[in-house]
Length: 290
Image (cartoon, rainbow, N blue to C red; front, side, top):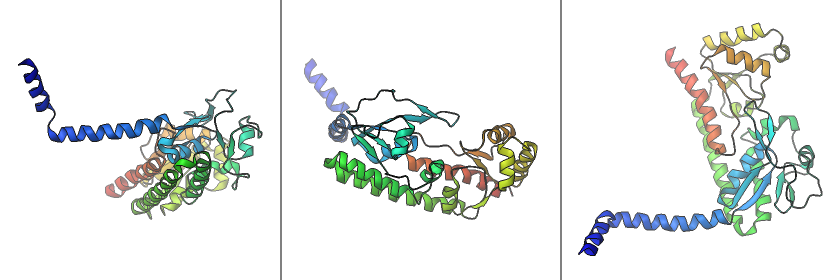
């Protein structure tokens, strides 16, 4: 009797619909667990490259960043000084390898470019440029498919997804921000703003030279406050000179926006979308109040 009672209770608890859902959840678990278990471990040098590789690799690549960004925007090494050569290591180019103390003769070393096709000091700008990102993603696809030929079509689909979502994000950015004024003090996000067809306002090169050297910061503060009164968003990033960042923080205005770099835990496309949305929130509220 007790057994029949328990059986009836189980049948009541798990309705036919619930049983079907549990069955498919079980199948999904069976699919995902082997993928994670068989994921290829990969060391990656540059933080930007780690973010891109993490997206492109999906469930088949576990990215281990050699370097991450600290809260103050500087690079911080997290990988051990002596790294096993059994695992593949991906770098931007041979100069990047040298920068992080990696021998060009290292076993399992893979380079994205033999010679970096853009100035190294402009690295952040190119990794935040929607017109350049698909070409970098294609290079990563080439490396992954050589390391893991079995899942070539998966990486190809990831590239197509990346390109499609990036294009959609830029189009949405244009819908939100086309013609909107933005006072740009960032060093890396100019192309992202241009892709959205913002009306970009920037200080003169002469003023920037003074301000980044800690001179005429009162005039800088006054200029930013004038921009804020006009309801125009003010954006900056981790590469904006430190003394200028400090001045912006002292102003304490919600119209001043820090455009953050994405972390490896974030989806790169969502991060770029969030940059557009944060600017639009200020621009839209200013337009409403006016």
